[in-house]
Length: 143
Image (tube, rainbow, N blue to C red; front, side):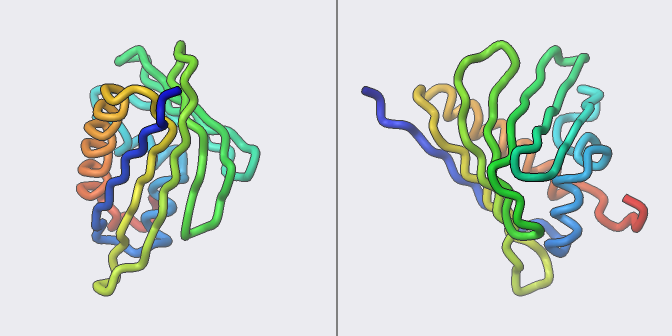
């Protein structure tokens, strides 16, 4: 039996928790930063326990989806994670922690990997994703 692998990343985001939560959970806003702009990302989010999400890119021919296990605004999201065409289902927990400077420390914990290579690939993907979140324009009031 293989011991499940877990990755955890923490990044500081220069916006308050409510604003970062909205960027992460509003489908239109999520589509603007989650994957590179060239992916022409589309997102669907049914933000409730038992609700589902889907993040897709026709341009990159890929999509991921899952079901929310916890929705604790603006503190924590927990959801399953499965790439289209794959059997492996993993678990993602995203925590939004208030930072002393008024920003938000985002902690992503992705667990239940069975292959070190998949775990490493997802670590790189999350690093890229979180870099785009940090660079996201949080100033627009209508977003």
